[in-house]
Length: 144
Image (tube, rainbow, N blue to C red; front, top):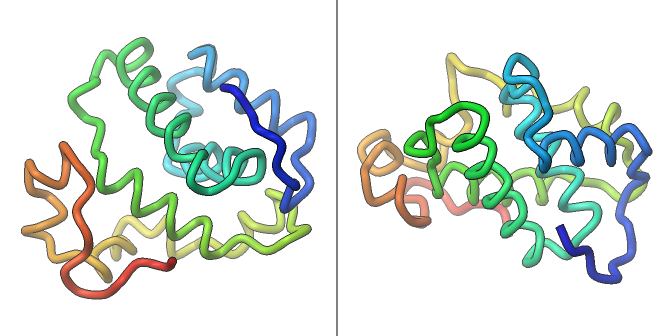
């Protein structure tokens, strides 16, 4: 992933960079590719790149990982990727390490009450249109 000159918002550790490199090279074991890992990838990318630039490597990385490791490229969901990236960017605080950020994201990990259903109706979020391309929410605006 090409990184432009961007002031780092938070300390990205060697461990964060190693995690991202394993993800990008598809050497991250499938058992470690959890929902929390998706969030960490976005957090690292958002700290290394401008928010507008971060989405491309997040998207491309997930598509590559889904294809190469999971053999499930069709499971990629564009609206979920973009919306989570926006939510994560909106929650980031300057100087906050990944470990500190991760302590305050229980609602992003809640599978019983998925956060995206606060923004999207099930009908829209789970539509083919939302899977294939980003759609704006129909219930509440995403963080800017």
